[in-house]
Length: 451
Image (cartoon, rainbow, N blue to C red; front, side):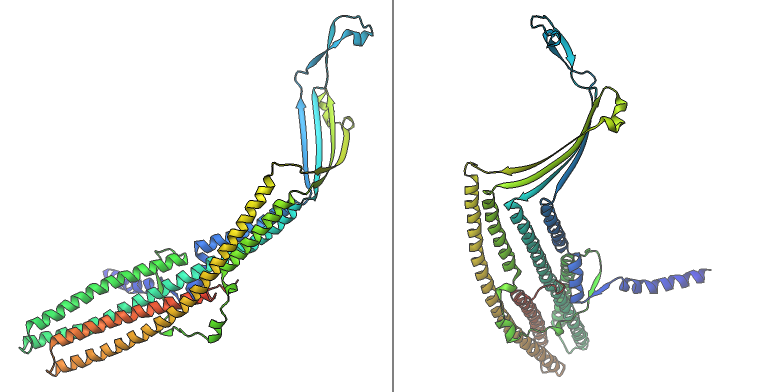
């Protein structure tokens, strides 16, 4: 029995790591973007705004449709009010004295009414309906803007994780090499062919590298949390990234760069809709000078009796109906509409100024993004060359040390320079990635193709 328990325990111990690995979901950049566009809270709220704008169109349209209301009223006059009537009214004698109290009305009163009202003309209604449709279109563009922001955030965060993971891999490779050199030097010291300071110097370098590894591993965790937060994913979930930095393409066709157009930027589209809405607001206020015409009709039945049972007798109910036309003519409102229009025009002029500033900024952003990418790629080439040279120097220095014609200090310094060159190369690589994403955004390429 004990042997069987140990067997199950061993099987469970072997399966647990596999289960833990399966629990980690693999994400390419495209898959991460797809997840983010479905789960990021800002995108979800933007989607809700589009639904709200769609409902607002129908809400506004409803004001132009017939408005029909019905009502039923029942009143029980427990104590009917009495009015004094001169006795002369009953006797015909103008000299008759005194009054008689007479109650007017019945104890049980019933009223049933149905009314209809139809707008025939209201200038502000038609303009308001058009404004609601324009607002719906603007909200759709707002959703695209939210998606662009998320794509930018997720892309930058994704590559930050990859860069940090690559730093960890390079540190691990350096540690393997450094540990080998340390063991070889320790053996030489024990045999009298190296000094103790050589061993100590390599041990210090190893300790520093281990400390750096711990910091970079923490940076991997932090950058992964940032990525998951941008994706709208719980930070407690475990994910594995599958893309490789080597697969990056920094090339642009000349036609892409020459095809730069401000019309591709959602920020410009948003402001275009705001300007259109401001123009409609001016028209809406102006239309309020025009009379409004509505048609109304009503039908009803009423009854009154001192006997409650008469309320259920259809013959005791009496019908009534009416139709009418209402024309509301604005005459004087204290000049309110005049100054409202003045404010609307000021708002439109402000938007025109903002449009000019925005287009100028976006043009400058595009030019800066092009220059930044060019400079970043130049720096990347320089740092890549430096890293390769530092690697060659490190290899040559180690060979010289093994042959007894070099010093341990040279080996240590060469390793330090090589590690620094690796770090500089990765920093330059990430800067180039950021520059490429910024240029994609400036060109209007960071958009969800499903829109």
